[in-house]
Structures are given as structure tokens and as C-alpha cells.
Length: 178
Image (tube, rainbow, N blue to C red; front, side):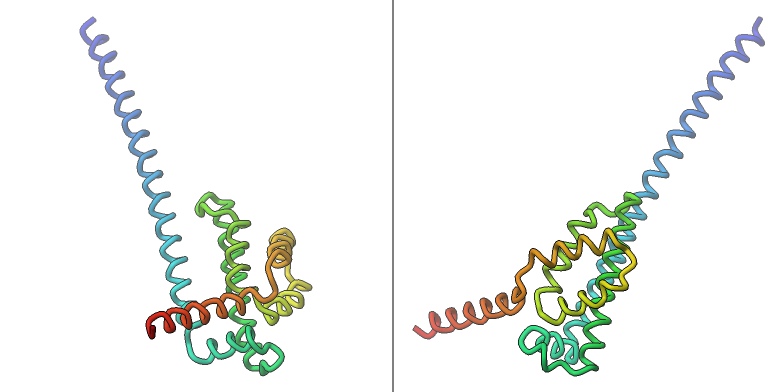
């Protein structure tokens, strides 16, 4: 009788231990998922910092300014440089869409598309580049979403933004001189 009570309590203790172990495994999986998310986010930010450094480099900055102000005067070398930069942006976008589908990236692909198009496709060169690149773009749904976002964007968005910045600078300089 004593041994059956002991066995009963031993079995309950073992079951509690198993349950505690499963809870611990669940917590570790959750922690690993969060660490993975943070790692992916950090890698994304590093990628943006890297691309920002490339964009602010002298030759790309000159090519980007021409794409905004005088796209017809771009050299082939400048077009190649800009095309590579835009292609990289689209690769990052498709990566983010995949990560979103896996639950590892919160923003939807549509949100990312709107942000990317707003930042990079507000000039004639980028639009013409996409028109050509779209012919061989293999991700159809993503391509259609990019098409819609570009169609909603003003052709001269980037030029207008820089003109507005120039006006603000001039207004501040005038106000400071008075």
C-alpha cells in the first residue's frame, strides 16, 4: 500500500516535471523567435546604413541628382550605377515580403512598397528603369503592387521636395538677414 502511494506521488511529480519542462521549452522557443526578429531587424538597419553610405557617395549622389534634374543627360555608367541601386532596393523589398509571410517582419509588403516607391521612384529615370525592368520581373504580385504605387506617385516628387527644401532655406536666410 505504501509503495502504491509512493508510486502515485512519484508519477504526479514526474508529470509536473514534464509539464514544467514543456513550459520552459515553449519560453525558449519564444525567446529564440524574438532574438531572430531582432537579428533580422538589425541586419535590415545595417543594410540601410550601408545603402545610405553608398547613396551619399559622391558619384551616386551626382548620378541621383541628374536623375532628378536632368535625366536625359545621364551617362550609361551613371544609369548602370542607378540601376544597380534600384535593383538592390527591390531585392530588399522581396526579402522583406518573404520575411513578413514567415511572421518575422511586421510591416506588410504593401507598406514597404509604398515607402520604397515614395523614396526612390519619384523621378523620370527610376520610372523608366522600372518600366523596362518590369518586363522581366519574376514576382508578379509584388510587381503589380509596385506598379500601383508608382502610378499613384507624382513624376516630379523628388524634384518638388528638393525645390521645397531650397525655398525653406532661402526663406530662413532672408528672415535671418532682416
